[in-house]
Image (tube, rainbow, N blue to C red; front, side, top):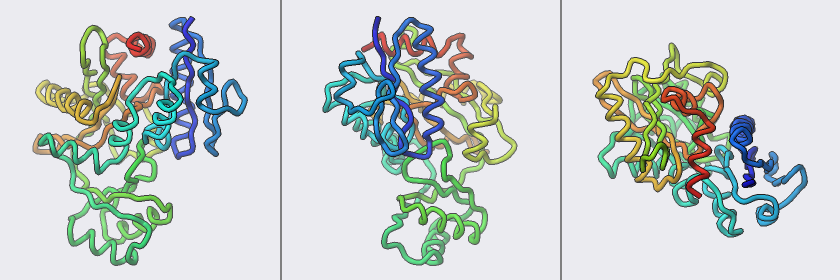
Length: 315
């Protein structure tokens, strides 16, 4: 029986989401007949295998491969992938370079622009050595009209993402972002409909199987908390056939441009004129029942079980 280590937890803001995704993957693997081994990274970054402190190299005694569900820092930044590579441990998902590129929103935007894909304008802010809050805000206001999205350079799930409609709100959220001490971007907010599109390699006999686009239906701007607690994703929603086709092609292009492996999920905005804007790509999609990737699997008559079986079958 193949032994799969479930890497979950982590040091970032997405710790509890990673626990949830890891649990969901673990359940699916067990239902498919695989033996699972818990590999928990605690909030201090210490790895525990079967409840005991360990290092990555130790995992080879207990597992045949790792399924990475570390969202955000470590797991999607390329750091843990580098450690797994150095230890000679087989793992699923994107390699280090691809994960790091997708995790950096400016680099991912650059990849989109190189393909001629529209992406909102963004201004990079480094907390260390910045001017006063007023000067930063004024500089942004001169270069970019409201509204704005203030969010970390790296990370996902709308963690520490703020929407500003006035210069006063912008100053407030810039101040808040600087206080965290991490680089962030201020992005032009695009009014429109949000959609997420998953890509799975080798699924159902296709080299790049594109899941149906999931429109994120909402009556307000979704916060991090909304995304974790509300059943807001509706498969295909009000998307037209031509929009779904174009979104599928763009998701496939971004998957390949970033060098993603096994699977990914890209997010887009369709504006009022019908133009599609690229936002970001998750190399480790969330696996809770209410999330877009899982809903799309169900829409095509599939399951998390078929998904994990496909990915492991390629290793």
